[in-house]
Image 1 (tube, one colour):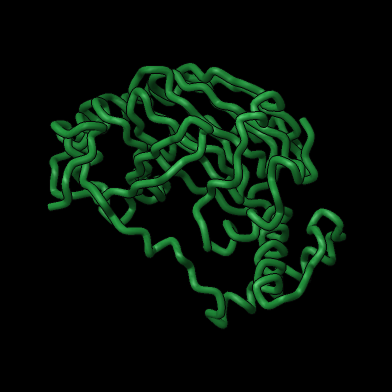
Image 2: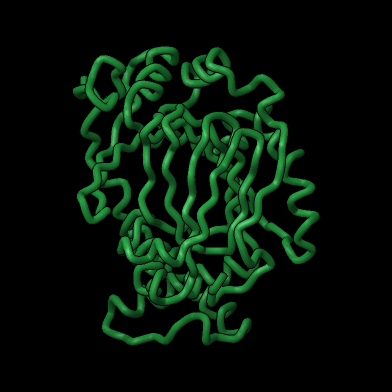
Length: 298
């Protein structure tokens, strides 16, 4: 698979795991988890698409529903719910994920994560996640339902660096420009329960559930290579916003990337670049009685 960013993961690859055997992702376990999970760690999204595959996003608030009612809204609707920071919010599940990650990490001798974090994804039978990239390495552990993933090349045509800068600077969400013509270049993977998927760093991808309620956990990891690259993207985006014309980060040497990472650390301390992601208006609360599972705000 074509990418202008370094490995050690060079193509999508499927692994097996047994996380669901723990009993931690049954309906009863999930309802109990939703009851106690911190509301500030919920991301509740609803995506609408036009005929060209272009997306608009609505965001929701946790609301006061019980965990069982919230789970019902997800299972009946068209919602995509992320529970962030699983490593602290659900240590028992995280321990199972770490056990499953060990053989995956061992299969990539050059993979040396410096940070690991997870988000538990609960998504409706017909939910779809638009074309986007993650500014981190990803392992997607799938536990319930079936989903299809399209993984695309990480070249400039599919992944414009200016769009990457905006995401890393938290000026936009992770969605990037998409054309249906890109699908001819994608690797398509149907993911079954008990499978995990890796793909190259930054590779754009999109996801569709295959008519079943799905439960997955996305493990994000950083290496020094990805940290340097993200720092360079942040610095270049800041420079570009002030009228400069920095070159592409893939043309930089490791010392050059490291220098720009150091500059990004200093820039972030100044508070010069303000995140725009907290400004999204919450427009609904999950409600199983409403179309798409999205009810009115209380």
